[in-house]
Image (cartoon, rainbow, N blue to C red; front, side, top):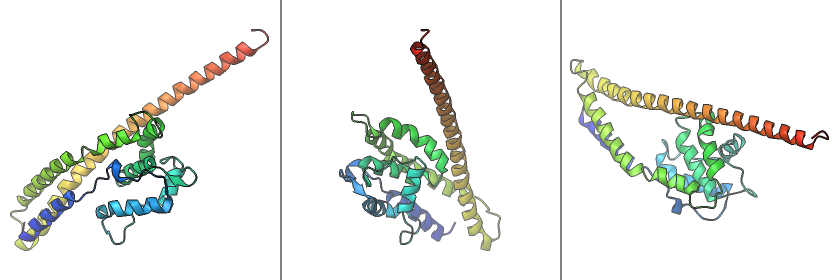
Length: 224
């Protein structure tokens, strides 16, 4: 590939360094109105947008839709807590690769078990554990991208010179796309498995509740 392509790679790798991790302590400890939530998210995650000057990280409509689809617990008196913001950050990263239904399957057990939990293991603990892995993963990702770039450089050596650079870039994009495709398939399989387990658990719980209700009715009957 040409020097321009090498510059492109360096630009991509540099952009990975700028991916911003919002630490829990960066999030206000006071409840926020919706406008304050959207402003906070736009300010902290603007660098991750494809078109930072035009793309909105989060809008009021998005937040309302997330609440309607049970992705986000409802606000209290139109205010959103620090935990609401943590859930929105998860949704922001997931929505580029998962459907709303899959995000719901993944996040529902998290919000059900850990949202508004008072002990030491809560939603913030889950968030911190996951996102503190980011630094190491970014370094591994940079190495992987560089290896794919170098592999793409070796392709189409016999192609006409005027087409070689484009074809090598095409090869590089294909290598990256295959990686994303396989990981997306893996994510979908895992979410489907989690969803099936959740449905089975719900069925067992309903049967148990029904059995308990029937036993209570028998206990309350005059013949008992």
